[in-house]
Image (cartoon, rainbow, N blue to C red; front, side):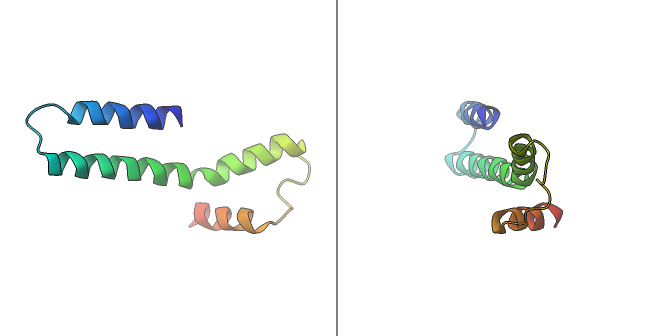
Length: 78
């Protein structure tokens, strides 16, 4: 999350230089932020299973099927 915020802020500063129109600047910045959000959502499954393994002590983390885990598995493996 820290790198995502830093990357968005850095892109905003770099796109703020003269020579880039306002329309292009907002379009590129929106696409950059959307790409970061999609990357984070795509990695939620890995993060959630890692937290579950650490929290449960690696016992039964993969056998419990909750709706949010199924959703993240479908999202990750599709």
